[in-house]
Amino acid sequence: MPTIDATHAPTLRSWVESANGHRDFPIQNLPLGVFSRGDERPRGGIAIGDMILDLAALAGSGLVEGAALDAARAASADSLNPLLALGAGPRAALRRRVSALLTEGGAEQAGAGRSEVEPLLVPMAEATLHLPARIGDYTDFYVGIHHATNIGTLFRPDNPLLPNYKHVPIGYHGRASTVRPSGAPVIRPQGQTKAPDAEAPSFGPIKRLDYELELGVWMGTGNALGQPIPIGEALDHVAGLTLLNDWSARDVQAWEYQPLGPFLSKNFLTTVSPWLVTMEALAPFRIAQPPRPEGDPRPLPYLWDEADQAGGALSLELEVFLSTAKMRAAGIAPVRLSHGPAANMYWTVAQMVAHHASNGCEMNTGDLLGTGTISGPDDGTQGSLMEITRSGRQPITLPTGETRTFLEDGDELALAGRFVTDGAVSIGFGGCTGTVQG
Image (cartoon, rainbow, N blue to C red; front, side):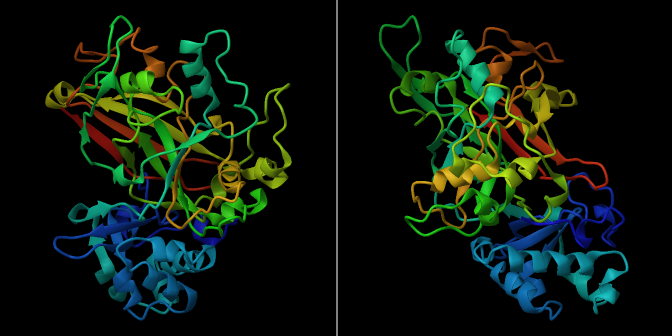
């Protein structure tokens, strides 16, 4: 597990002025992504304030060597897969070198002048951001216990949680081909639905379009087929995190989910934030997993690790904002729909990974895991409109007088996340947005 080092020092400032005080990308973050500019080919980059450090250019600059050079060369491809496959060592070496080059007064101490590094920067406003990795497989979990309880209560008031929930991290295999970076349009899907009072199903544009507030977990190194990943080693296989919006067609879901679970209701689009916040950057924000309520079962040994319980959760605040077309035309700020901590996850990231591979399933570099919707127990903390509006029975009223039960055409939905803890500079993911189109 990565530890706190000089790259996390709260006193660090960058000569890239926009990084100092930046909500998401101060020098203590240095997240990885893939970008292009104009007709240039996509390649790896590191976000620093409002700029991107071009890793392909860095690799050819003579400013890095050893493991850091290996990492920069690997990141010169059109995806981060070659870099992620190298594991944590080269990734951490690159982070340390880049931190030194971008620190105020540090470039000269690192044996390079600012004038040598500055030409390697690209304004983020001039760049197109891509998915950080080629995704071979995508699995979505269900580790938000309050979401599971809230949804279960709508349909099974007397027994909201199914018997297996507290014994095993529940998940299903999603569709990797429809994962897109922030800003991709949300094209309202068509589907087969059946209204409760209808005699037969019908096919057409879905009416109950929803979002789900999640985290995306990106695999770095994988495992061989037939070889499980021990829980104590699980985080060594994880490269980093992004935000993830699991767009959902609730009316399709209600009709199709029995007996095999989500299918077309979930696979039309998944949006992720394009900047991968590395496990190294997250070291100051690791906190103890909240203790299980009294009476809850202790997980089986393959899912239990004392170190993971002591530091497997994250000091991360999550938010969701909604803006309608009418609100934007009137210059009205987006409305915050929910706010709450990621510590509402009942299962840790390590438990998700260990369980996924426990039967010998082969996990590969670039695989994406969704946490499932992260909600709290109270109003204002729910991570989906299904919960907020009680399945459409309690509409929300917006500043324009508009009401919403589910998302309508022209609505823009934005997720945000910020890591915050005493003694550390806060860092974030950047944008994770989508606008609904009919």
